[in-house]
Amino acid sequence: MLKAAILDDEIRGSRLLAQKLAVFESELQVVGIFNEPGLAVNAITDLDVDVLFLDVQMPGMNGFQFLEKLGSFNFEVIFTTAYDSYTLEALRLSAVDYLLKPVEEEELQTAIARLQKRIAEKVAYKHIKVEKKPNNRLALPTAEGVYIVERANIIRIEAMSNYSVFLLSDAKKIVVSKTLKDYEVALQESFFMRVNRSVIVNLDFVVKYRKGDGGTLELSDGAEIEVSPQRKEALLSMLF
Image (cartoon, rainbow, N blue to C red; front, side, top):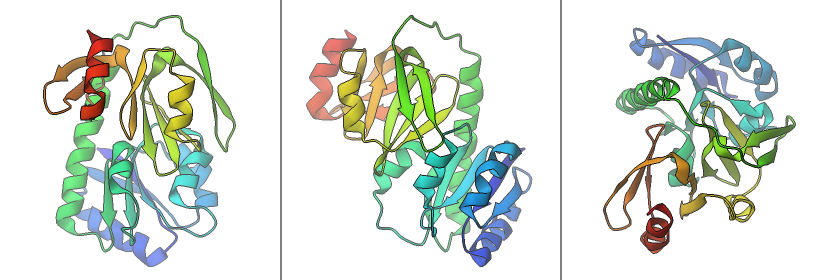
């Protein structure tokens, strides 16, 4: 059974969501409800949850800042918010889903199905032996501290509002308050490529290219990334 936590500064909102999630108790269990981001930072990590239902707009620390404060995390994220003014396309790149309040049961069911699929892909990927190659290390500054990662272990980097999310081969995610452009420059000498406006891919993790207007990349962790038509030719020249 999947374990979930809820972080929402509105007590009524968090309780209402927990009640709606109770319908799916055979698949998912809510093990923690938090209303203060500052107090939730350490507690959520200790709970070892599979997914966090995270409000975006919160006083003192918004949802993005909360993730950056964590530094790194292994759980999935489903954003919940009363506002639709955010760039949904960018948010969905790293989040399982983006739900508008009041959350409808049908939308919640769809989000949980997506979550189950992503968790299954993550479990399957752990059994794939990844050949580590000697490579340079990259320093990722977060609110918690500086993480040092091997470039060869970075699967992809995704834009999330004004932040960048690093997805690593051990399923860990690290949120950095720098733009994708900053890392496009830093990684330009490596086997990385920005394949659309919102994603930089480590081409070593590409397992399949599907033809199309721009085409689609399938990565070894199960992710499917659309390729911008303007970048298709350059991508194919690097791959083949």
